[in-house]
Length: 474
Ligand SMILES: Cc1cc2nc3c(=O)[nH]c(=O)nc-3n(C[C@H](O)[C@H](O)[C@H](O)COP(=O)(O)OP(=O)(O)OC[C@H]3O[C@@H](n4cnc5c(N)ncnc54)[C@H](O)[C@@H]3O)c2cc1C
Image (cartoon, rainbow, N blue to C red; front, side, top):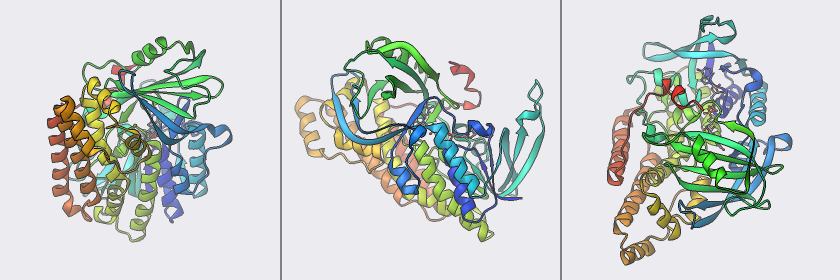
C-alpha cells in the first residue's frame, strides 16, 4: 500500500511525486514509457523562466538549453500588423529536463514503475483507492499482458491529455466538463533548415520568436534553434472543417523563401492534443487529485502546459502529504489544492480563456483590427504570455475609435469578452473553500462560458478522444 500513486511522469506528475515524497509520503510513479523516454518530445519546447526561480531549481543549461530569449512578435492574420512584447523565454530539451526532474523525484525517495500502462481507477465506497495496470513488456501480439491492482491512499492523475483516471470517474465522485473539440488544439512541428532571410522568419540576432494568428482557430510559431534550424509549429483548433496541423506548417514553409526543404525532425509527440482551455471545475475528490493536462491546467493563450503542470504539482504534492499525515484523504481534506490552484494561477488562466474563445471565434479581419488598433497591444501580449492578470488599458480610446470607424459590433464583443474575463477572474479568486460550494460556483462558471459563447456565436461539439488518434494519423 502506497501513500500516493502518481499516474504519469510528465512535468506535472514528476513534481507532484517529488513534493509528496519530500513531505514524508511513500510514493509510486507509474508510467507507460521506459525510463529513458521520460520527458521525451520532438525537438525543443518553450517555457517562461520564472517557473525555475519560483520552484528553486536551476534554469536549463548545457545540453538542456538551446537558447534563451526575451521578446515575442505577434503577427496579425493579414501579416500587416506586428506587435512586439517583452516575453522572457527558455527554449529547452524536454527530455533532458524531464530526466533531471525524474532524478529529483528519485532522490526524494519516489519509486518508479516503467512500461506499466494504467487502465483505470479502482473505486470503493466513493473513494479512489488504487489503479489497475498492465505490464507492457509482458504483452503478447494481441496486447494481452499481466495486469495488477495497485493501492494507495491518494491517486494523482497526471497522465496528460487522455486523463485515464479522471475520465473514468463517475459524476458522484467528480464533476467534469464535457470534452469539446473546440477546446482542443492539434499540435505539430517541423524543424527545418533556414537557408536565407525573409520578413516572416526571425533574423539570426532576434532574441525571441514570432507567433502568427489566424491559423484555423490556432496559432503558428517560428523560433530559431541552434545551427540555423527553425522550429515551426502549430496548434490547430480541433473542430469540424479544419485541416489537420501538417498542411498549414508545410504551406507556411513553402511560402517562405528563408525556409529550406531539409527537415531534421517532424511530428506531434504523444499526445498530439493540447487541452486549450482553463481547468476542470473540480480538481480534488475522495482519494483523488488531477494535475497538469489531465486537469486542463494549461495556459489558454499559448497552449503552454509544461510549467503550469509543475506549479500545480507543487501544490498538489504538499496538500496530498498533509492529508495522508492526518489520515483523512476525503475531498474535504484535499480541497485545499482546489482552492489554492483556482485562487492563484487558475484565476489568471481562467480570465485568459475568455480571450482565447474570442480569438478563436472572431474573423481574421477582426483579429487584424485588434492588432492594428492596439486592442491586443504590447501590454496585453506581455500579460497573456507571462501569466499576468489581463487588462485592456485603452478602454476609452477603444470606444471612441470604434464608434468613429463603425466597428460597433466588434467593440461590443470585445467589451463583453473583457467583462467575462473579469468575471471569471473574480469567480476563480473566490472559489469556494469547501466542496459544498462547488455546485453553485460551477453553475456560475458554466453560465459565464455559455453566455460568452452565445454572444460570440461560438458553437461547440462534444468529442470522444479515446479513439481520436487514428483520425489524425500524420
Ligand atoms: C506539438 C506540441 C508542442 C508543444 N509545445 C509546448 C511548449 O513549447 N511549451 C509548453 O509549455 N507546452 C507545450 N506543449 C504542451 C505540453 O506538451 C503539455 O502541456 C505538457 O506536456 C503537459 O504535461 P503533463 O505532465 O500534464 O502531461 P504529459 O507531458 O503529457 O505527461 C503525461 C505522462 O503520462 C504518461 N501516461 C499517459 N497515459 C498513461 C497511462 N495510461 N498509463 C501510464 N502512463 C501514462 C505518459 O507516458 C507521459 O509520460 C506542446 C504540445 C504539443 C502537442
